[in-house]
Length: 29
Image 1 (cartoon, one colour):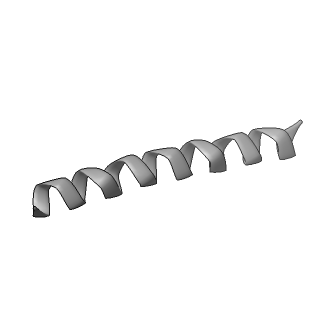
Image 2 (cartoon, rainbow, N blue to C red):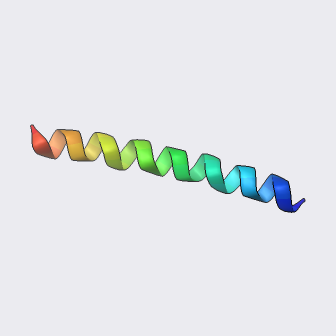
């Protein structure tokens, strides 16, 4: 159960990271 939560949190982190990265690229342009 704890492992599942860890994986889910990591997936959320990746999604947030990608979104913020795209936002950073857009703001740079």
